Image (cartoon, rainbow, N blue to C red; front, side):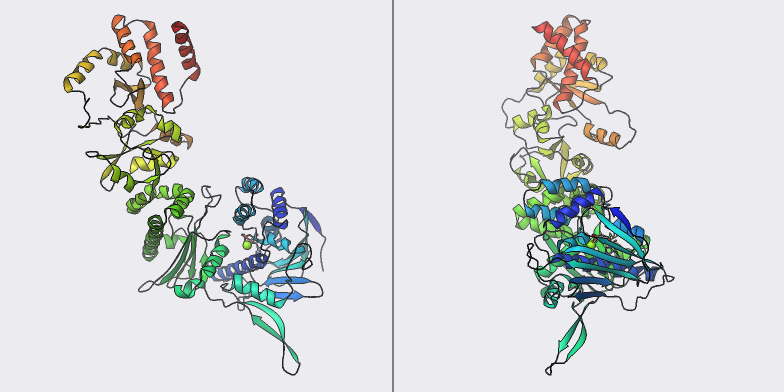
Length: 638
Ligand code: ADP
Ligand code: MG
């Protein structure tokens, strides 16, 4: 007996997505079956897990399976499972809406993508799973009953704007999805999905490793022409990770990867390992070739699933993979854990921690191998995941040196090609003891920053670091392979270079200090609100002034980042360095010597400071005042 029918509208994003899916974003329509089977398999995992965790759940888990049913007359294909099922609310939430963050932005990107491959790989990130049914069906009927509830729900839609929902009595626990198939070989060129051989072929190709039986009813005709009904299990159910490496083909690995990642592209790297001894486990890990769109969103989960003896335990197992390797996907099957193990216990389990250390080493080793073997492929990987890997420099001190070897950074050495730190060290000048770097928002601001001048003039290579995270790690990591990391915007610079003929002598330096003996303390007092000190610089060749931090000061960008996250902190005052050879600075000195009370001097001092701030890409505290002062003094000069 069916109750009244309610018609609901798909959420706007869902409608857009459906349209994209239906209008053949996927060139390979066969995959609809993989998606529905994967959902059914997940539902069986969930029921199994729930009944383990809570023995009061009234559900029969003795014969969990997936059944495929063909009705040639009605032209329907049904995928049935006796898994967890869904409540009415689940249905509306899970099937009627897309709850994932970043959906709207991703849809935009899909619409803008010019070729089908890009669109496919973008859409693959959604796990559009269920909607793919509408590629082959013009109507889909889903009936479901949640384990532990009494009544079931029917959901039906033609994939246009709306769906119908109603209560249905007498349904078994689990879900059935019935596809009313579009005509085969019609204008869409669809295969015949009612044909037994076709279904067998798709299951074998895409879903062989599903660990629940996928059954199909058929019939067998014997030599005498008698037909008997049969039920066959179509998949081998053998967990891919449990098989020896040599027996798994690349296609199988890639299919498995797609199943767990929803990624359309093949993985960049596959790591398959087995540990024997006191704590046995198998691990099958993948490094994707493309970063998911939500890699930096707060909700991003880790990609490693935990199994215990082939039984699925949990997704997003943070105990097995550090946050900075959250893009790694895969499965770890540990043999000697309780099925009821909790996340909290896992976090503190000594053996799990050892597994994690080993997995991290393996993943970093695989990345290192790629770096050594194939620079171009590595470059692509770094583009996708470099920013996340750099988080590890701060998070994972044990592996910081290994991660530093992976860092690929822009440098003044070759504007076209990034360098490794190792490459930098090999090019270091005789007597150079530090690795120089400068952070900033863009390559251009860094390259043109006054801090660069002396380094450029003397031919020292400087790393150009423009990721926000660079501010943090470069500051925290003391050295690479024994070479100090030194920001050229911090501390005193003394680029002594014995080979250079025009080195100034100590008496010259002393004379210069004497020349500025009156101006510097006056400036320090005048600008005391803005800076800690004013001193002469040896890092400038063309600019009049620049601002530098102390060796342990945080950089202005970092200061801004902390403020943006709501942290309270006192303003960090830095040091103003003057170029003693610059005409503006010498003129200022002369004017100050002639009349220390000249009111213009204070304004010029402010302009020098503001100009230095602008040159390094900083923000003026009062831009309107700066412009007013500048205008006034420009008028005087004309
Ligand atoms: P995904 O599998 O990536 O989450 P899908 O579109 O394939 O996306 O499915 C959406 C959600 O609908 C699933 O996460 C699941 O919660 C629910 N669902 C789909 N099919 C089933 C099923 N057979 N049994 C129970 N829940 C299901
Ligand atoms: Mg799915």
